[in-house]
Length: 108
Image (tube, rainbow, N blue to C red; front, side, top):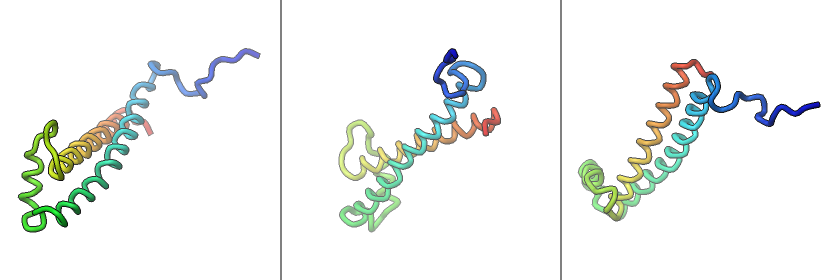
């Protein structure tokens, strides 16, 4: 008896709806991972800023100044907050792209 391959019955990459399905699955995984990293980091950083920093007196001004810091050359709690927000937005974007692909191509 000949063995036809070990792809487990799934269509090979590059044929049919394989690429959109893989894109949607990868988008869901990447988005979930990014949000799973960003949300606890945001909570921890905001908590530390309220306890240690000046965020307790003016939280909206602190968030505004945190988002004004440079992602590439910043430091401290404000930089960490900015990076966590960027990672969270990237996660939301990846999830949204995956959901759009799934809905448009009816991949359920």
